[in-house]
Image 1 (cartoon, rainbow, N blue to C red):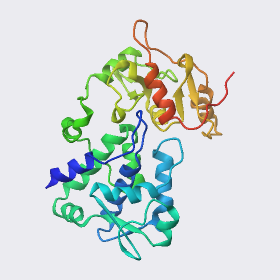
Image 2 (image 1 turned 90 degrees about the vertical axis):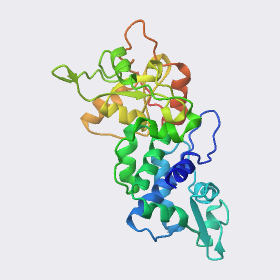
Image 3 (image 1 turned 180 degrees about the horizontal axis):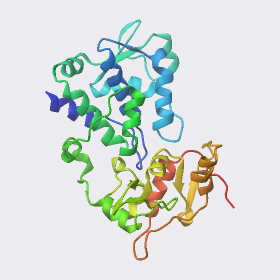
Image 4 (image 1 turned 135 degrees about the vertical axis):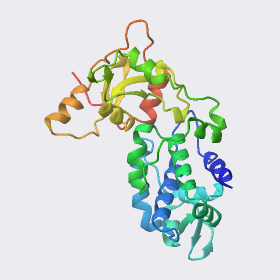
Length: 302
């Protein structure tokens, strides 16, 4: 049944401690779905896809370096993935050398492949669930493109909540308006405040601690950001440091005047907002973003 596969997807077992991000299995599963969409018979030989998986982990995983060998082996235990080697069925373990030497290859289990063929909408629903559970909305479209999947329309508000009972909370659909009002419809990083008539354009409410990782829909977990700085914040290029000043990662490279003006020149700049009487970003949420999303060390500033 469709619900069985959605429940199994929502219940992927992951290493977790203190809110640490571990999206290794979701990234592998998204990659496998993209490959299935192109060729539903293909096996993914580890040695052939290792670099692709490394790239996904570097781009969308936590700041510390990790290996794709871990999910390639351990996803088997979740009942959605199988591995075989030159010796027969079964994974040789989590070692990169073993996976390469034995010709390890993985793919979705036969029952899931059959369900995806039988019910075309299932692929999109699993994709949507993985995106909602593990990544912020600002990254969904580009992540789909990175793994070769069609961008997914937003699901019904209750879809992810229904299959993720452990979240224990429902989304507060008022958050965007509350956050934008708190920051007086200005980007907290650059001050952008564009409108068409009375309607703000290019302004978004960003979660500091992602909702997928227990970040609440509260104003003190939000920032009003323009579309550019929202994307850079969720990618770990930008962060918020002590004194609520903007941090810029030393890993960011941009030589154009626009890159300097829009990114590197922000280093050390105090946030614009929130307005008096409204709580700024709570320290635990800011600390989570710095350890789980922000990449590298901050650029020095004067």
